[in-house]
Image (cartoon, rainbow, N blue to C red; front, side, top):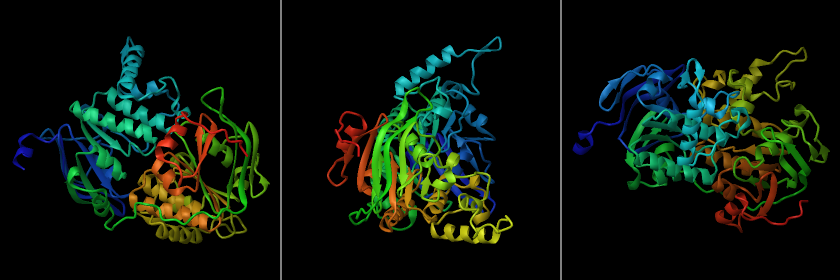
Length: 516
């Protein structure tokens, strides 16, 4: 211990307590970050990880405790103070201006001006140099509203690197990245640590922590459980510390028993918002009752637009979408929602009304049903509240004020659990699940995977869209690989390998399937 205290810690958070209405998010937590180390922060959804990092970044003020940088106590009243101290943060839900370009977002707040005129040329050179150095390929002129979630993630990281921060906070940085991008990011983090930067890395993914972190601190329900050296522990031990019980890390399911066709997609083409060409090009496939079909692919290969076309968020250029034999190609969203449930890719944009309480969010697509609305058009608030409470309990959605909690104030993982609960409980023949376990901890992932398999076994057709190779291989009964808007391969997860799947995803391999 003597040698550890010889050099001051880069950051010390000592006895931090942060309260919100109905909940103590951080209960007397101490966290110490060494210079040049990658320190992981692990915990279930709602354990208080993001709150603790938001205290360090100045978004929240702790009621108790102090923060030290390089051994000296500091006051961090807002993110400007944090940036002045060299602390940067990539947020789980990105803090980007949607109508600005990538470049404008990166330089926002630290712009170079000359005679009152914005000087972008130097900034552009610096951004391109950083993106080249760290393998973070972005289009500086693209609007945030037009780019994929993965690209937005890169923009956030570049924003932090552009400010030359030396304490880097990554809040769930890999939740939206492809396997290849995750590998690249891990390498980037190792390189940054070698350069002397100190990294705090919030993650639920035990394999990533085992690969990249030096030490890991575990939080559970707002309390500090302990700090261990990664080289001295195992994924099983960490999951036990995090959840408080052993966790099943492999999906347990019987072989699929496909029955009648539920979803029939024929020659479907969907336009791209970003480019003049189409994002989805003449795609045809079927999904049957009693099977989980996974659309796999690297982010940005048309999966988002495919789901938009199926769910009605984007019109089709051509082609046909049938569910249970009914043509829904041009049907309004309310009609589609009679047949399908949709767990969207962007939970905050398309999944929740963030300023509504949790109970209203639970009935967003069903509020007009007789159970929730009287004949005279008034909401039956008691019914809505008791229905929400049932789902909150069943799906272990953690919120400070139960069904009255405003959705915006909940942790990302609990927002996700709320959406999953709503969509699985709704009557449906088809479930479209896009990144359903994004940002969830191992305990919640285990639960959601069981729910997807149970939905399949109850006779639903499940279309899973995932960027997680492990999830694709574990959960699906059939895999369809998308590359540049086309389906380039159909694979059996029991007969393929992650390596072969990766070749299809990168376009290095394709089969000549006649699209049925």
